[in-house]
Image (cartoon, rainbow over all chains, first blue to last red; front, side):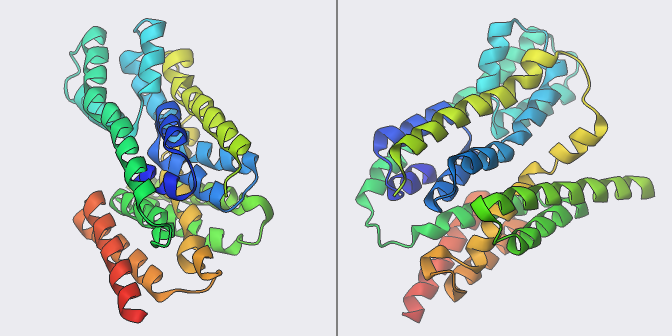
Length: 207
Length: 108
């Protein structure tokens, strides 16, 4: 819903906003693209940064493969479109808890997790877009994206490696602020990932 | 104002790209294992990229001409603290927005 409000504030029409949510169906990446387009970043940088945010989808895809990799191609293609944070998190927990599920049951379960999440995402984007058109532009909504991201990141800071990755990325991003074309965001993000991976390795070595 | 051509390039490009990322393994790789170092890095994509996007927006918001703004920084800190303690995304967002609006009202 927030995406709908913010997108119309940024000047998108209701149709453009809804298309965005149906085609991309990834909240964080959509917010990223919106924020960077608002900052007039070049199109390639917008795409690269938003896709970088979505790299975790590749990780989800990889970790779901042993479970639903045996399903027919068309089912896997549809499952891929619906691989989002929520459907992944719920499914993988279930699959790991009940290893005796058949592949058929697993793919059926996966689609079951999608039904409450994805249609609601579309509907609330539309609701948000309609509300957004009614909210005056003077309202301080420029800060809604940072607040949303902070609220998403905070609960994810489970280990020292996560905290280290996030802190390093934030500091690097401030240092790289003057790098042209908003490329600093990507560089800082990669730096943060490297710090996180290193800290995880160090923690494992100690344990 | 966001350019219309750019917008549609981004929507379609991002849609195709996201699908490719999601389909990469379930669809194409089958049951092969990814190298451990790659998985180790992919685990930190979200906590790496998202802070990098917002750090400058928190300290030097464009809406304030790039200047430090007390309501925005306070709102960011409140959101982060609520999220850490409470583990509730919606609650943290509402707390942050309430802080922002309250301070903006009090300071103007």
